[in-house]
Image: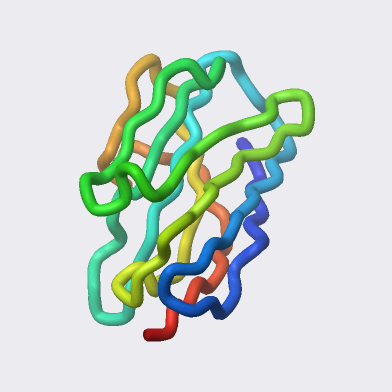
Length: 124
């Protein structure tokens, strides 16, 4: 099992930037995929981005592609999400998640381990 703790959320104006971090501890494997999901009030949890163990393969939701960048530092056991050009519709609780997979799943059900979430609020 992997323990995940997110940080870096906050309040930012539209057009601004935030960098989320997710610190991992516990068991890690070379085929662990890490991902970011988000959930806005009254909506289902949705996929944001995913990255494979080596960082050479990434996947993004259409809504964030070109604005968000996912990365990881395996030496520090930390996952990142750089969010630029933020929009009010990006407001949500952001979760990091981990899955043992050789693919980049976009379904939340494929991820076993989850953090507690960090709130991101973008004002207009």
